[in-house]
Amino acid sequence: QQSSHQSTLQANATKANVLACRPTKRLWLLVVYVAVHAAADRAAPAPDPDDTCRGDGALAEPKCMESFRKAMKELKAGSQMYPERFTALENAACKEAKKLNNHGITTVLWVFAKNPKHKFKTPALRRFLDMATSMRPFPREGEGFSAMDAASVLCTHSLLRIVPSKRLVGCAARALSDNLWNFDAAPSSSCGGNSSVVSANRTASSSQQVLAPWVYARVMHAVANLQLFGKASEGYGIPSVHPSFLARVEDYLNMTRAKLSPSDVSDVLWSMGVIGRTTGDVYPQLFEYILLHHQNITRRHHHHNHHHHGHHNDHHRGANLGKIFKSWFLACINRREMLPWPSKHVKKRAQIEALGRMPRIVSGKAEEEDHGVRLATVSPFHRELSETLTELGVTHVNEAQTAIYCVDISLTQKAKDGSQVCIEADGTSHYYANRPSTPIGMTLHRRYILAAMGYKVITIPLHQWASVPRKQRRYFLRDVLINAGITVAGGGAPPGGAAGAPAGARRAAGGG
Image (cartoon, rainbow, N blue to C red; front, top):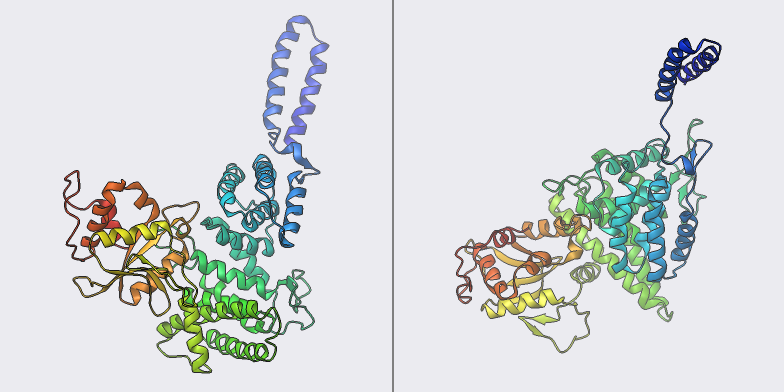
């Protein structure tokens, strides 16, 4: 700036001298003046394309943010958003995406994630992310990225099934780690459970409040659901957080477990089981705490079963017990020891909840009665696979129960190596929205557990099945089974007479 100012003064002085000289000399001095003035222009900073929305050196808030804040309040209150209004918000966000700061982008992502109209949010999100990150990476440097924004953006990526960038994961983990460093082992007990921050003993130089325990419980769930811990990222390019960050979060949640709801504690246990962090002292303490808490809830419900909310609360308790049983099953594998349950009744009920719903179809035939249990909704893709297996003469069971999962299709015939074979019909919800060929963390974890239980998993994605012509699908599935070691009597030769299994059939037989 000093160089630019000096060049401007020199140019003004040169202009005054030019006017006082003879015409011939004035021409030569005019050439010098033009050269000096061009140098001054080159030394001046280039105008920023966003200068129109800046004020006093700061990024002004776009007009669309007021609409998004209003939509956020309505969604928090339980209101629904009609497609027409969501389309208007989508267009406004895409129009001013480059003008949004880090907090504005986080707010827009939250609204997109909380929108109940799921079929509308994925295309809108893709358009917004393309516009918001086309000129610079997210989050921006120098604009600030708070711990609450970091937690919110990880949770929204988990809800929207989006693989976060390596830069975003690193910045979020760094912001949350800095926030946890302000926490002391003895937080104030005057903080309410519904607050988004927790009072903590801080030094004089620290002015940041620690986020509430329920926020970090959701962060743990997002890390597990997105597989941001290095276990499943191999070969898929998924970034991961450092183990020391996870250890710090676990210690914080264990020390503040009294402020967590039963659902949050169940999510934390499930996340620790998925991530594989069950060998330390934190998991047994949380496991014992939540089981005692569940017993107390059951006894209270027994005495107050006349309330009309009893069935709703019982459903939530059952879902929590299912998560606890799945995490306990994984913990026993990792710890190589059986953690005790308070009673056989609670353990049996938890296992029933973990198995989930019963099948609607068995061996390709629909069931007529539900027998008082929740029935699984079988997709048309799953039903078509079952019918094709029946045509091939392969006996099977749909929604077969294992220890903690119900597999889509279990073959009664074993492979040549003696292993049990199961088929997973993975629809679009099993893959990331921005990477349609990359399975999400839940899907990868399910495959790992089934393989650890001795199953040979055959994965058939919906997009792969749809790419095969209808008349060729029978022979495609036959080749998949043959590659997996299953003897298929029927099927015959494909109409084209092509020999050998296609590459897609070999990939499906290999589990992915």
